[in-house]
Length: 305
Image (cartoon, rainbow, N blue to C red; front, side, top):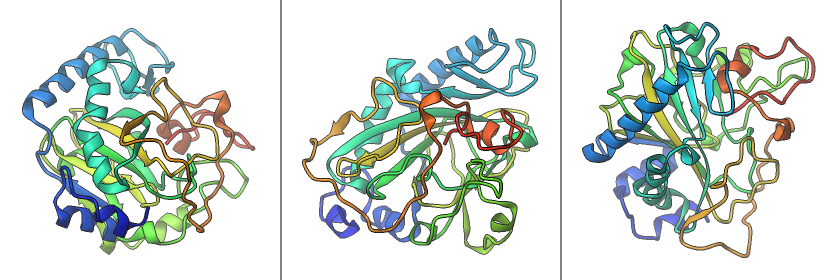
């Protein structure tokens, strides 16, 4: 569906101004959207998993932990696929957030993936400039990620930042000069980003961020010793069909959670870079961007969004 066709459907959650802002700039944020009772449920479950992460000594299929992680000094970077870890996360993904997604991709909404990222007081947790769609190409670009801040987030603890209008510009090459996937812009490309066009999406707990999969974005390192959790859910329009392997499928991947399945795919003529073969698995964007898991060569099985 085109933006005009999507906007022709009545809004469920967002205002018309918020929807138009998204289509113009490639992102939008909404403060205090999530009810406090829902937020408390999410925080309680999140604290449970954070405590569980103290038991692991290395990243596994549930937790992505930083080097140096320990029970005494936990550095949990990501809870992987929260949608299948607890019903509270899945209920959140298929509730209010699914209605938000319908306001921006159209009435037929498909769930793609989820993750819960933690930002630490550590330079290694800077998420460098990148675009999402190269990780999981689709036949069109009605693919969005909705984040929910579980804690107050300001410039002190590494908010999500996006480049205005970049969703309508060319996609970047996210391989390095040696042909290795890095999941980020090269240093030269990153140096050319016009910082005057950057918007930092801050907000109190319960605020949401939304960005298109073509939108160039990053998050700076945190200056706070308290970890900042951001729960992310990715959705697609039902007429946006994947043409590469899912990086980390769960039992919920590709479920239609609003509307119905469609019989025709919509094809956007703009090209998209193809990622490595993800079928052998991956770890995290932190590991990919810091080359934590490889030292060079054509390696592409350990990275993520």
